[in-house]
Length: 291
View 1: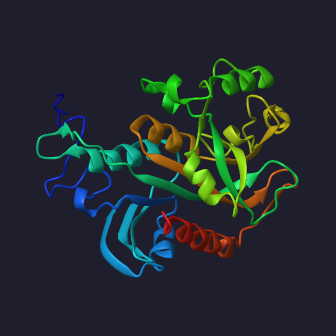
View 2: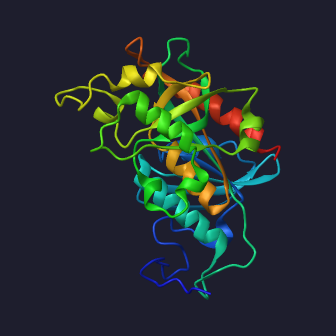
View 3: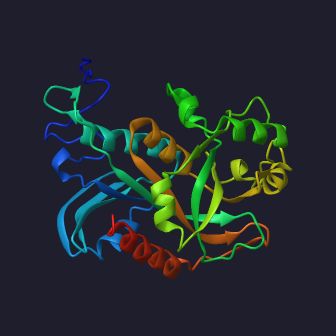
């Protein structure tokens, strides 16, 4: 059995994993992921009991109970790179023996649900609405670095999307990955299902033009018109593909639910979106408590 070198998995002197500063016993099986470190408190204020807290850089964590279910809420910060860190270290906490530095024989499955904000790219999706990323299209290329990506991705959808958009070969190859079907069923009565674009940036990768012109100014129109077996691309965000992809490779359940705070078609955005986020949090916690 492979022993993982200390250079590959760094464990702090207090027995916590390098970036998250969490110890294995501090992690619940249900993990709520948020981008904004300040949003951790919005989730944890609903907990019946707080068990522990940890903080390092943008990674804030609270573990407690909600309606009797043990849960962890963790902030990841913005972007795909932080999801790579967060999900890999969460999996290590669950499935690596920190004493022997070897994988545990019996694997622990985590439920990872990201609660985020997003911009809609279809005219009928309203600000304040919840969208469940049934499929994520990753513009980031992260999963292409991992062995086994073809076994978990929807290769037919990838080919159709690349052909439809005339994808530039200089850009990372997009990958299409589904959320966990059980989580899709759990949220189906409270969220619209969709195909979500996960972009590696907020500006040009999402078609925004401030001073630097996007390489393909018409890409968003191609994205909006893409139809795959009657399904449309619904929204942009920045983390869902890496979360779903890494979880699928590691044997965890994962999904992303976003509240819509911008309407890209109407060129409109809502800056006072906190009430929508609070409602999303309450809805998601109630759903996760039934698992």
